[in-house]
Length: 193
Image (cartoon, rainbow, N blue to C red; front, side, top):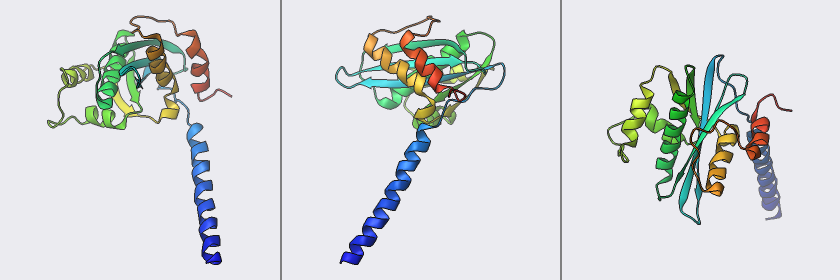
């Protein structure tokens, strides 16, 4: 029995030490810039459980990691998390189209939402025309695609979604990054020390 407990404890420690090192590696994942002359728009949706509303945010950066603009949207109605993430992607696509002639891609930390718009099927329900509006936006020749990114590489969009919930208001057309988000922008860059 003592021998079995010793082996169990040794195995437990080795498994947990690997998972702790994996967690460390995940936190080292950073945002990566897009190709030259392109924009990358990161998007996220955050939930306020006590108020039952969502904050959706999109932030655009260029190939130098420079901030180019952001939009946020406060959803005061209950929606499924999947739908909130799709709405965040739509906010991001609209931002990319509004920012000028550069081509752009969208990144989301919702794998389900990215898969749903990357290969739409007849089986998906169209939430208030959301699927159709996303397909129309995707038809733009400037839209390069939507991809999944881990949360660790999507910190600024996540922060702005939570900030939208705290502020309790949508921000449209504002080209200035909120002061509270500037340090997140700097820490998010792959070349930040």
